[in-house]
Structures are given as C-alpha cells and as structure tokens.
Image 1 (cartoon, rainbow, N blue to C red):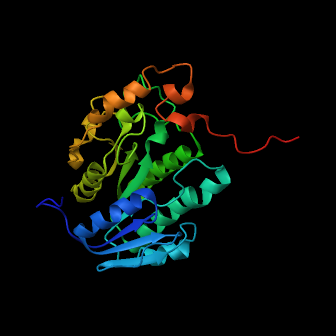
Image 2 (image 1 turned 90 degrees about the horizontal axis):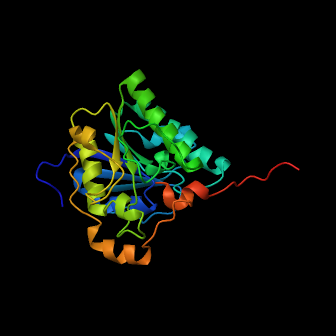
Image 3 (image 1 turned 180 degrees about the vertical axis):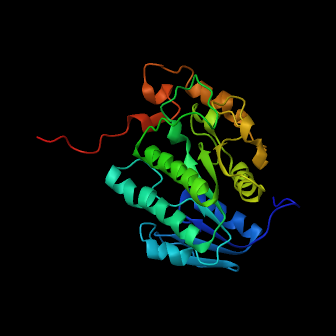
Length: 275
C-alpha cells in the first residue's frame, strides 16, 4: 500500500510491538524506514531484515533512554490496552508514558505518534458528535491514562517543542463486532494511512485526531484535523445490515449501549471497599 510520496526514516521505534495493533503495524511500518526497532515486555518474533527487537519495560527510565537512542520517530503503542485496576495501569500507561517522552526529549526525537483511545471520551452519549477539541470524559482507568498521555504530549510540545499526533483510536479490528462499532470502526489499512500521515505531516504541534474509517455513521468530526492529510478509504457499511439485524434496538437506559465507550463505562470497581 506504500504511496509514492511516503516518508522514509532511518530508524523508527514501535512500542507495544507484541500487542494487537503492534502486530498489525510491524510488517506495515517496515516499508517506511531503514530500521524498525520493536519493543515490548512480552515475547516477540525474532528480528527480521531491517528490524531490531528489544524487550524493555516502559516504567524503567534507563531502559527507555537506551531504547530511544538514534530514533527518528516514535510510534508509542505500548502499555496496558484494556481496563485494569489503577495500580496495574499506572506503571506502564502513566509512568511509562512520561518515561518515553522524557527519554525522547533527552535523545532529541522530534515526532511522536501516541496511541490514545476513544475511551478518553467514552462517557459521551452516542447521540453527540465530538471534535478533537471536545473535553475528555474518560470512561475507565485506561481512558484516564490516555487523557494523561494527551496532556503530557501537550506539555512536551509547549515546553520543549516536541510534536505529537495523539490518535484517539476507535475500534480497530478486521471487522466491526457489534452495532456500536459501525460508528467507531477503523480498518487496518486506514490505521496505516493514519500513522503515516501523522509521521509525515510537516507541522503538527500537538494534534488530536480520531482514528476512525469513513463510516456512514460516526460520532467524531475530524474536519478540523485535515492538516495532517489523513483520508480514510474504508467503511463499515458492508456489515451494517448483518449487525443491525442482530441488535435492532438500542436500550438507552443501559450506559454500555448509550455511551460511546461501550462496556468500558461499566467495568469495575476493582478495589474492595474498607470494612
């Protein structure tokens, strides 16, 4: 799918390379760089041609300082990717995000693509249309950590001039799994288009972009974010009849059906109340 005008980097870093989207991006992003450095704490496939594989915990600043050496750009997809208790989310998603940004600052990295999430705004109703400037309403500890990451990106741009595109990724799977995902679905090809646009746009400052395909229905308006050049080409429409037949009625009294974040809005609490 590599476009003729695609950027070319000497070395890109992909954190979270063993995760769902990391495994999707690994073979795709190799087309845009001489060397793709891959990192996770989980086991990964051995390094192939033009690859470097490094197991490193995000919560270890020294490990991040080593990981960011000689890197031109970062795709930060690492961390806990589902709802967990706060003490599980904290080390990788909050401390780890700081470590990545601080190590990137120390190493002179100029551009980060941060995998944020639509769970940053998950408590908004599906009856609302949001822009990238809509105030966060996290639906979970996971969503809260991604809101922190977006604020961290803004701070590092304002203080140090380090540019970030924060991607509020919707539901990126081979196909939408339910009626809610007809509006939030992001194809893998559009994910690649989005990441490449975020890396290659000449000036981004700190931009927040919704990661969503060109679906007929959506809750997110990216029209004020066209400066990065992202043009989705896929749509969830071909699955609409099938998924609406399975779920013909949406009960607005159920928050997991009413809210944009789906089941994340009802998960927990994880901690026991004191006796």
